[in-house]
Length: 43
Image 1: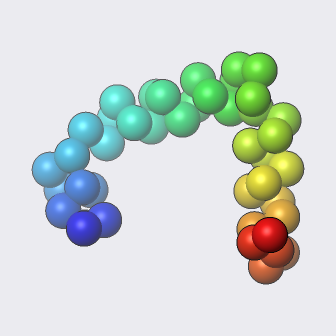
Image 2: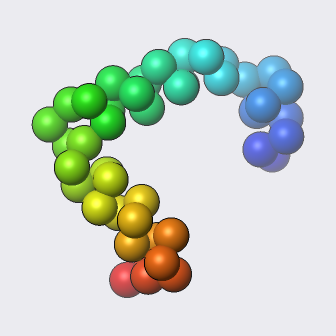
């Protein structure tokens, strides 16, 4: 499914949406979640 999205999906649009989310009010929470999941924490 991810492979199909990468080939046929709106990748550029979703990348822009993600960048806007990181720059928006929820950016700090998203960054914290990214760090935690990178450390293996999922709950």
